[in-house]
Amino acid sequence: MTIAVTTPTGNVGSYVARMLCQAGVRPRLLLRNPDRLDAEVRDEVELAVGDQRDVDYVAESTRGVDAVFWVHPDDWSLPDPDADAERTGEGLAAAMRQNRIARVVFQSSIGAEMRHGAGFVDGLARIEQRLDAARDEMGTALLHLRCGYFMTNLLHDLDGLRAGRLTTLRPLDEPMPWVDPRDIATVAAARLLADDWTGRQVQAVHGPADLTWTEAAAALSTATGVSIEAQQITDDDERAALRDAGMGEVAVEGIVGMSFGKRDGFTPEQPRSVLTTTPSSLAGWAITHLRPVL
Image (cartoon, rainbow, N blue to C red; front, side, top):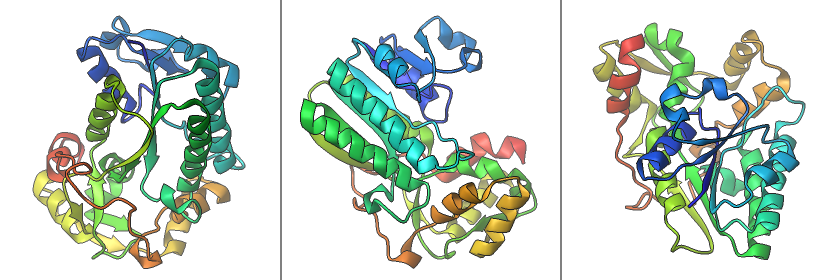
């Protein structure tokens, strides 16, 4: 069995690659910079070096594979990141047609079902649509993983957490799914290895529980020993902070747009269930990843 894995040095792809190795599979890793790959993994994998935005590279690097794990390589500095996502999705769709790939697992997001109005999640929705069209033609088994809020996003504001602030645009009492990327990788790897499923499927990955931001702050405080309080900020406050960080207006609006939630009348297409609930808690993740750096 040959399985292609994109973004194998990322939050999810790195775990997918390791899990496939542990399952006895030698995955084919699609990546631009092999120097970023852990040295201990290098001897257990096949490398296909190139750019996911290169249609010919995607077609060649997925030739002969049984399954693909696809993560869009975000670049929010581009003039139109959503159009870029659509182009990369069409590149994979072309490879699905040309190489008759049997199974594709796509890392999407909660909110992609809206199709429009969710900031940069709109780009993932466009990829879903391109892959759906190819699946309809080729009969590929296609799974869209609609993932919740990555716990690893907290690593982007370590200074704020050290100062005792957990900031959000969302209402503090709005519960939402928090998910450890390792759990997404577990679901993805299981589907990549299984060859007995068919059709177009959507599966949310919701983590162990929906937490409000106030509850999340309490869990982080207990796990790290730092007193952390949830604070709601305005869209304009977030825009100003992003501009101060050097982001352009396209990136600013795309990021702010991803704060959709109950304030906009949104509820996920898939409710929490045994299929969408995964085990790793926010507190457990924070003990391992946040406590050492706070």
